[in-house]
Length: 54
Ligand SMILES: [Zn+2]
Image (cartoon, rainbow, N blue to C red; front, side, top):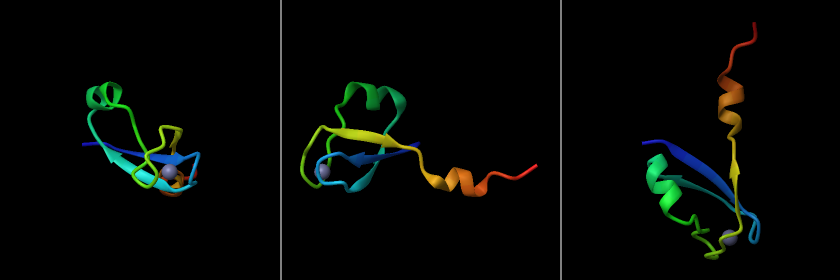
């Protein structure tokens, strides 16, 4: 199952959501720390680190 990383705009904490794409679109993503819905998707630097230089 893919993991989606989010950053809360209210408390500035980051969290991860594990859900299928269908589940993710059905469900509102809420911050687990402050229950805010003002969350923004984060694209982890993990992918940039592992990408090769050509
Ligand atoms: Zn929050």
